[in-house]
Image (cartoon, rainbow, N blue to C red; front, top):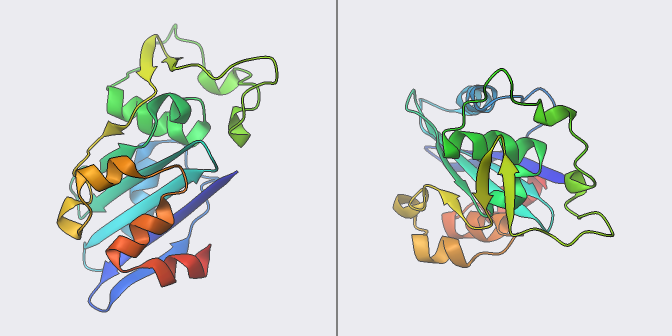
Length: 177
């Protein structure tokens, strides 16, 4: 099960909104969704969490390229929204002869649980790239907002509440949860 929310920084603090990812197919779609929530091109954080598996943060500021952090690359690569983020982080450009990953049967990965007869793998293949079971992306994504790289790396899979708390946005995030 996924949870996704947008946190937009305003003059009065953070504003949170629950967001629907049904129409998001690319990082560009996700970035555009964040820009629509922005007030005066200020910081918008997109939180995506797949229960007990991984979490991701996409930071959008104005027209700058989005900054991305994923807590576990291998776990994220096995899910539809995480795949969008890990492809971007790995610089993966799919060739025409690469199979469509959306068409593959991923055996229970959408709910974060491996198939009963399989052990969770340490790495995942994504279009020929090995995706490590470790954090990927911009480790300094929240540093200027008060959360250090060291603290970010210590967080578990249910980290979004801790992040919102560190940013002073816990109440507004919980209101949309």
